[in-house]
Length: 339
Image (cartoon, rainbow, N blue to C red):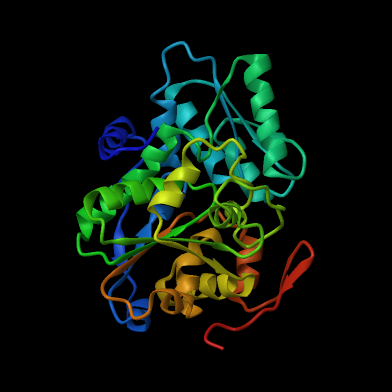
């Protein structure tokens, strides 16, 4: 099974009126550093504040009449998307999450009328609970990344990128379970094979990155991160997103917590953007020099997908003020912007 451009165009029609087309705006500061236009795809402007609404809306509105309800496992934004789409369709939703998920994301999902179940301390534990609900209560599971309708929905971002800037040289995509990266790559490569798509993730618990390196899905330890939305495994029985990312991504890059911290500051101070850590990894790759180290001198415009704004504002305030942040067993040392 693969995701085609036709699937992605169909997804755009299905999710119309629920998810929205988002702006692609230049960052003067980052463009100067890159030596070419550096553009920000602002998925933070979706109604739920994150890109996940696209795939969730396409999946939920593609379900047959009579569906009893939906469930999913989520690190936050997928659950919010499923809750929003389920409410729009008028069916119940139960969102399963681990104890690592920030309270702000739990509260956001409850505010949309969905029930939240906390199960264990990992995404795998939350997935097991979601699957149990399917078996015992007859709910339909909406995978956060390994579902053809979800992937096609996320792929509409790639469609919009290529419509707005057909001259793009490189697209930087946060990489987790691969639904976003795989969907965007499917759209971009179908339109222009020469446009590079780079998946970027944190260097602790990078499931898809390690799986691609191994040549098959692998388990990873899930740890606290500023990019908490990128946590969790890809599933050892992954059907779609692993193959898409393996086949279509030009490369993957890892960034550290300190580099994510700096990128969040930069987006705030230079572009007035409140972004989650996961949203800032593309900017982190540029600021750290790792993007140039991997690709050499950039040959044209670059777009980074800013995936969500649903950040714990207490943590975010500490970051923009240059204060230390504790992440489980790791302390990220504070630094002032520009230091």
